[in-house]
Length: 593
Ligand SMILES: Nc1ncnc2c1ncn2[C@@H]1O[C@H](COP(=O)(O)OP(=O)(O)OP(=O)(O)O)[C@@H](O)[C@H]1O
Image 1 (cartoon, helix red, strand yellow):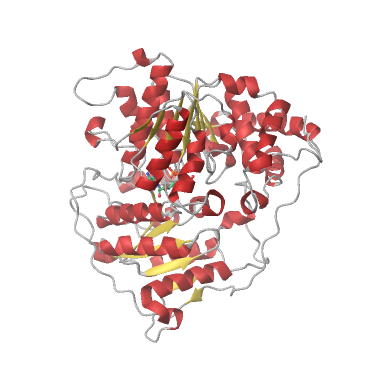
Image 2: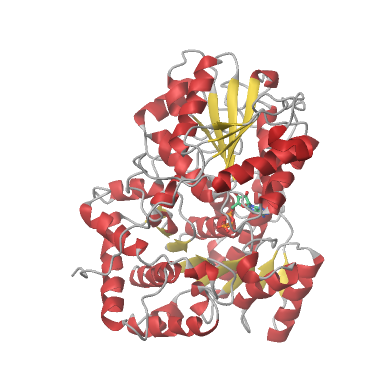
């Protein structure tokens, strides 16, 4: 039965302060240095034939089987996995009931979660109340959990670990955050996003029970807590063999940390993020994340900065467990198979995932399922799992379906390079990946030994980040890393995220155009950028030619990119989209329509 009421309207859009049209700055031309020569990285793989790619795009086909992707192959634009899952289940997406579910979920989003003590203190005690109300204590105790915290790479690590264990023949549940397009991406069963029908069913079950028992004393759970409770309900009712859980924020007070006895814990790369909640030093941040470690539970991490590592080790020794440091995976262990997630940093995440999956198998008495080889390569199921792992918006390359379909020749005039980096460390990683993959025009069909001249490509940055982040730490890291590799952006575009208007749903309408949009944040990002390029002269520099723009909306930025690329047919536009996973999701959603 559906609960009535309780759903508050979507948050009103903010008021406009900036200009409605693209705000062009006049600054000196960014000199474009030649992009470095081709590297002989083992990541270089033949690109698919464009005709095939175009056919895929035109058909708007569901995701190909994830066995397909190679590390540097442009990925055809895919239907969101959630939609593919729903299609399998024979359920129409975007039903009125699903919209209602999304509306209810939206009502749980409170700014307070970040602004005040959020996940901490007294509020944490509410989690046990919710578990009682939903009768989830016993079911959670029975789940065989892999639990992963970290600043960067936890989603990728979880995705790899789940994929490995699925390839070993287990029924898997995977809970990650955030989602890019549809909230159901956060809940995967056997590698597929949960179907709309199941999601609706489990949602109302949890929602109705909580609505009846909550009130003045016990408020409804905040958004992420509700989602975590829902994940526990789904995974226990669906009787998964293993539940792989990504921490939402921090560790100690995260909603996923109600699991008292996971099978194994992992802590991925630590760095500076969410400092407004977790603390200002790496030590403080590490202590929060170490809050998922448990007595008697094996734990793994990756090489960390000394300050963070000493805190992890100290916490582990307080608990009487040893935390083992796993090196990045050696590509030779994969027998020439590429990782399903792209970029050098993924070898770090994959190494951690291998340790977690291996320990899970060992602790559950399933090592007999895998055949350990004596020549140092991984078991076949591990290699398969690592190569079919799939997570959108992380180092993803998508040729624009609209512009590219208009061209008969083999070039791809407009290509989006999407990566949801939003911490200083991941900005650097993202910049390295972008410079690497644009060194050769990998969207060209045919052998990579014959790249199109990179002087024929224009590098454009499409950027936004949340206002809790410090652009003075993000943008310089991006710019400097690119510059060290000889890459300079021709233009930078700053836009608000579309999803700020539809925080939860993929189906809510974009802004109608009548709303007042506050562009002050984008204008300040632009100022930071211009100051980086031109020093204090910044936006008012004397020798100028328009190297950055602020757009009032993402659709208008994409329209501008398409127009620019049509007008300059001899030059391809390579657009790096980064700074926010929400922005990446918005771009993916917009370019497919
Ligand atoms: N090991 C790593 N070190 C540094 N940056 C990384 C690493 N792995 C991934 N990243 C960067 O972080 C982004 C998000 O990756 P992923 O989803 O795996 O991390 P996450 O910890 O789940 O991040 P989030 O907090 O945004 O959910 C990637 O797009 C990439 O830019």
